[in-house]
Image 1 (cartoon, protein in one colour):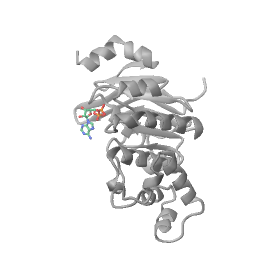
Image 2 (cartoon, rainbow, N blue to C red):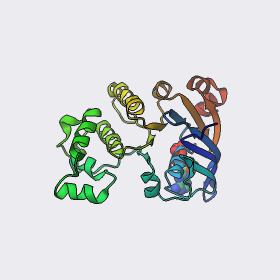
Image 3 (spheres, protein in one colour):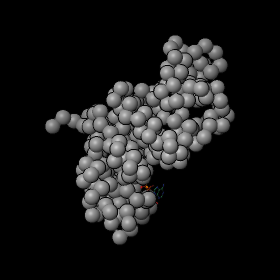
Length: 247
Ligand code: ADP
């Protein structure tokens, strides 16, 4: 069997007496879109944080591109092409969309100098192309703080794309987004996957979105893996239905 792009094996993480993740295993094949669902407090964010190196894990193994990354720090993991976005966006409201894009570039020193002096070659073309891709080109000179919440999430997505990640972890990409814009966002996520070759692991509460987007789903409940399979299999699983209904 070929090595998955991301392989999480038997990962456990507790906070004091709270077991946030217990012996969790997931696999994300190269090029896939995989969904992570589960009721509030089921451990999804903890798993994301463990994968990107935000906190050490208690037990288990996390392999990315065949290499153990569970002992590495956030920037070391990011440099290997593994990034995440946040449910609450992390943009700089007092900076323009273009400036936010420039400071998100991997070469921090050159991107800072880009803000105050010359631009790294090709950087502005990339900024413009990605702002166009997420539908924000016409807002490029606006302060990010003046965008709607949905537009800020699109900006954060474009900022992540500046780094050309191999694997992008998306934390509730459609939360807070106007329902009329959700289909457009799904199309962009699929396009980023198909055309830019970015593998996606997505936490999403909106079942319609995740059913449409993901080819494989994992469902957590109370820090444990409750079910995994195709979206239809997981959606029809009685344990999943019970977990969502609080049974
Ligand atoms: P989800 O993202 O599915 O809503 P979380 O991973 O945020 O779930 O939380 C799982 C459990 O771990 C919850 O009981 C939560 O209160 C607890 N938890 C998460 N992060 C921390 C933390 N930093 N300190 C203490 N408890 C935490």
